Image (cartoon, rainbow, N blue to C red):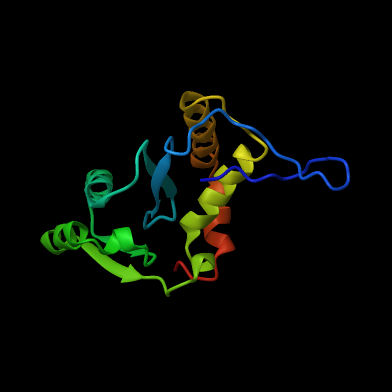
Length: 165
């Protein structure tokens, strides 16, 4: 996740830049899911990693979701290569409670979790962390702000062009 520049000022001909002390290899990757109950209650579950994601992390996240949701799960996700890893596909085949459906290729506007990441990006805009701890704290606070707001979670569903009934 890259912090976007929202508004800034600089003299004409000088591109504004925000400097950070983070090294390129220092990163924070997130996995997230919106859990929608039969009564319409929406919950957000996330998991963060300080390294590049592999199939093992996706499987750990899916196990987390299986622990949270005791019933059948309809998993609708995008065509990101990590979702198609052999380890992930094997795990899904071994868990018949999970029914997988795929969003069309290149259609992030249909994925409500993308709207969660948009809200997190909003909260980290114009922010240049000095270290990874600062970045983690800012992102964690942004995720918590979205997670605890029924209005924000509902907006994530309303933002995509799908019927959730």
